[in-house]
Length: 496
Ligand SMILES: [Zn+2]
Image (cartoon, rainbow, N blue to C red; front, top):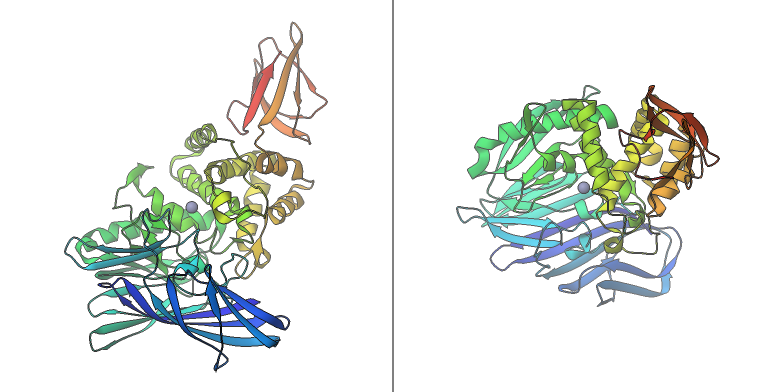
């Protein structure tokens, strides 16, 4: 089954905390199938399902809609229409748990947000809830709300119409999009705009859906977003969704990387980086337009690609704004914070919640830092940009850890699999053994790297970058050599 397109047509009733309407799913069956399954939480009540216009019988149990046919469904393109309604799950700790937030702004207007990064779109619309199958032809959201409220969604706003007491917003994205980004926000929003010119000279509107009461703060946030965009584009290539928009929407939760409509709830709390206002949350979530939305992992097992490289992008902002030393200090802090309780890549048999732990962020980023050192900037940075720009790895295509390893190994000219395995598939650190063999002689060896690696070694002669392997390298020094003083590796040095 290959999902091609979703259309969601829903009426939102803030007073009753209910939604009602339908979802249309266009999909291909690659071969005839006796049963079609879709995910939708149990608390949504399905009234009717049609396939290609004909009513289908179905069951809806344990969050799964099951439709069977005695003659089996034919291979080819189909259109399912599922009519349903109900009170969707409410998020208790958004964005860390998913669901709807039925909040109010300070003047009492409804302020509604949806998050479902780990729960998936199935919390409010029927879908195939797996990262490997994004709708290749995008999604339409036709959302009706009480008149006076504004709906912010992905892609382009095609139309706004009003009827009786309802306003209907039609948002359309033509890009492939993960199902946890197919959602909308509702509020008493004002739209503040600015034009952005990309690194490839394309004009893209920046649009900030900000609560009316905070409209005065929007211009500063858009300036800051522009600085973030410049850094992301420098390292990862042009903004991925130039035919649509750079969108931000103010939300009651902290934030989430929703494609072309980033959720922002950091309350305009800025820090100073390089003497200018910086919003870490905005920069990080915006980074997911490249890592997560454009480059998407094929399975939750490889989520470090989205989070780890995105956090590495956060450090790139520091490098651009404050220089290499500030970047190194930041990476050393990141390295110290790694926990090493579980491997980053644990295998594809586990679910989204099990795969999700803090090291996929910081240790994932630190791994990029180590690779940068091993490969050198002239190979590492173009390779990283290739991962974010080559059609093989982006948009309709998804990636695994092996894809990333093969790309970097190819660019390096020899296999980097041993370091990918060590840092991503185990909780071990790089074991470096330093042994004094004479008054001014030492042997240094890598015990578990599985391949020769460059290591900075500081002696009275200064710092040298030397290739060390498991057989050991002899060093002449009057003082105890210092290993990797700038901190490019997560390591354990034993001295004897
Ligand atoms: Zn993130």
